[in-house]
Structure formats: structure tokens, C-alpha cells
Amino acid sequence: MLRVEDLTKVYEKGGRGRKETVRAVDDVSFDCNPGEIFGLLGPNGAGKTTTLRCISTLIKPTSGNVYIDRYNVLEHEKTIRSRIGFLTSDMKLDGFFTPGYMMDYFGSLNKMAKEEIGRMKDLLFNELQMNDFVDKKIDKLSTGMKQKTAIAISLIHDPEVIVFDEPTNGLDVITSKSVTDFLRKQAGNGKTVLISTHIMSIAEKLCSRFGILVKGEIKELGTLKQILDRNSTDSLEDVFFGYVLPEGGSGVGHAQ
Ligand SMILES: Nc1ncnc2c1ncn2[C@@H]1O[C@H](COP(=O)(O)OP(=O)(O)OP(=O)(O)O)[C@@H](O)[C@H]1O
Ligand SMILES: [Mg+2]
Image (tube, rainbow, N blue to C red; front, side, top):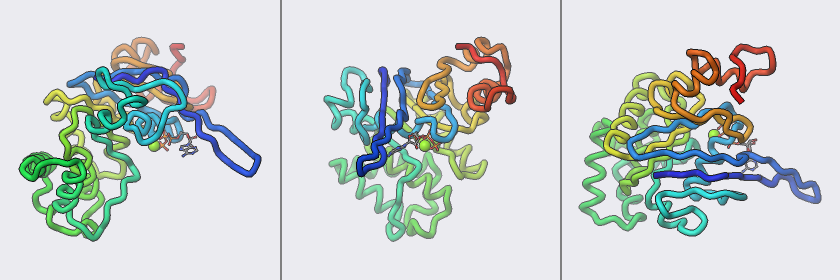
């Protein structure tokens, strides 16, 4: 089980005597269970990527902690990393290599045995329907194929926790559906899945619980029904707009 506890991240910007700080994530807490897909929703700049980066040990929290079972990111960085598959929106793949080669490379970086790498390649290439292009150079692949490659690489070590930052960004409806179907299957197999997105329609269909993040703060947390009931509406989008649009804009009243 993944637990985020009072997570805060303050960035320091500027230099030469002019120090500015940005409180990107402010006292955020939520958890995500095996078999569940949790959606972290928020507009641009809300702090989604920062939260997911802290969880995946890429950056250190200013305060608070993240746990997977009894391990935490402050004391057990390596263990946490081995248990998480992190997909970032800015992952750069070297265009010269093929998906097949990249999987071998990342598998060996993870110190996996050859047979184990082979098993995971078969599994992920099949489930992501990648077999037609695993031997093509990455710079010849479409956006969707590149995204599937990035997804496969992020999961080569068969992690129990899947943390995907905007996994359907820039994908057409077909590829987007194959990615969401894949995530649903992963949760069905008992994985703990956490995604960030600003696309309400995808979140609503895919996730069982949600956190709405605005300016670094969690404004809503719960199942769709809990959030809708609390705001007396039948539209998650309305709740979202209620927080992000200026006063008087569309949307419903706030619960808090
Ligand atoms: N490395 C950094 N240094 C300084 N400020 C940063 C850094 N990364 C992010 N920020 C700031 O922190 C805030 C949260 O950014 P973050 O990228 O986490 O948001 P996001 O919800 O992922 O947004 P988006 O939907 O645009 O991806 C923003 O104000 C951003 O400008
Ligand atoms: Mg982001």
C-alpha cells in the first residue's frame, strides 16, 4: 500500500541575492491500495508532477514522507525505487535504439537475469500490443508507440506500484484507450496504480478514488460518489471548475 503523509515541497528559485520560493506541494496526504487506480487531478501548475516525483524518489520532500508498506522515501530510497514504476511526461528516449534493445538495457541496469528480462518483454509487449514495432528504431515510431515504449521500460522490473504522470497526454483516442485498458488490467492483477491527469473524462472512467489538487493543496479526496455528494452535483468537471475557475465562473460551491 502507498501512503503519502503530509507531503510538502518548496522549490527555491532565483539566485544572486534574490531568493524566491514556490510552495509546489503543500501538506498533501492520501493513500492508494493494491487493486485500485487513484487519480490525482489538477490544472497546470497544481503540483501533480512534483508530488509524483517525490513519491518516486526523484526529488526530496521538504517535509512529510511517502511510504510503501513499512518503507519510506527518506530512509529506503533504493527499496522504494525498486518497487515503483514511474512514467514521467518528459522522459526522453534515444531515437537510435529499438524498444527491444531499451528493455534489455534497462533490465540489465535493474540487475535482472536474462530470462526474467525476456519474460517481462514478452508480457509487456503483448499486453501493450507492441510486437509490430519492437525492432524499429525509436525515432521512426509514432507518439503513441513511443509512449507505449516508455510505459514498457518503466515496468521492466515488474514493480508493484505504478506511478504514471499524465499517461494519456498527447495520445489519440485509440492509443489512449489501450493505455487505460492496460492500467485497468494492472490494477485487476493487484497492482497499486496512481496516475495524474487533467482530463476529467478519462479520470472518471478509470479511477476508483480521486484527489483534486489545486495550488499544491488537496481540495477534495474520495470516491466519485463521495466527492459528487459533498458538492451536490453529478459532474466531476463541475467540481473541478469550481476550484480552478475564478469566482463566479461555472461550477458548484465548495465543500470545504
Ligand atoms: N524545478 C522546479 N523549480 C522551481 N519551481 C518548480 C520546479 N518544478 C515545478 N515548479 C513549480 O511548482 C509548481 C507545480 O509544478 P508541477 O510541475 O508539479 O505542476 P503540475 O501539476 O505537474 O503541472 P502540469 O499540469 O503543467 O504538468 C509550479 O508553480 C511550477 O512552476
Ligand atoms: Mg506535470
